[in-house]
Image (cartoon, rainbow, N blue to C red; front, side, top):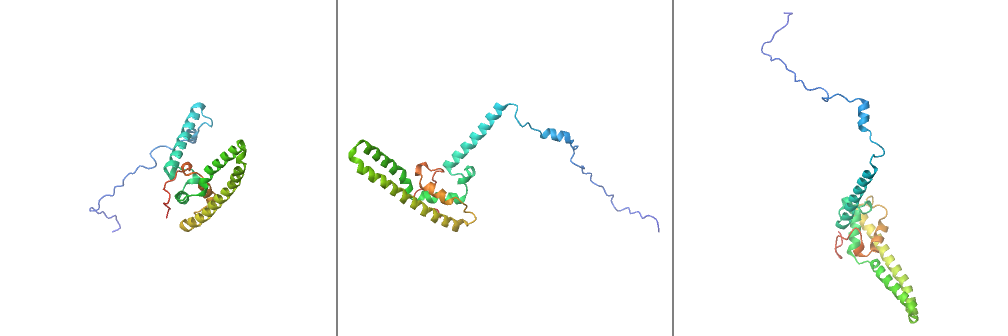
Length: 195
């Protein structure tokens, strides 16, 4: 009655012996610090510099390739993101008066140089000189109006928090570049405005 009951039908409980710990001894502090120590100055400076230059050259090559192909991942930070792509595509889709500024300015400089050698062209040179100011004013006005209109469209499309600072200057600078010399390269044809 007060004794121990024995039950023959219960199977004995066997505990699985799982390995305790991580299976290796904890390294001494001295050993861990020695493993993490790296020299501040490499022992072979020329090899380290060659390695660093090769790494920078490879990064520059990837970045230049991205500027041609339009790959956002490897572009410089100022050109990255959907907002900047939208702005670039919109500027590239239209004819800008700013792109015509450089060829017209070169023509006017040639006329002014010709007028210095031929005295009969002084009136033409004076007209060309003043027309250069008019062209600059008209092209700059066109680019500024485009930039403000484009910033408003980008804020509607992406939200005001995603359209950061520098949008107006970014659009103006791109509008004044010749289409062939723009970087990142235009990814759309003229007239294909982004939605």
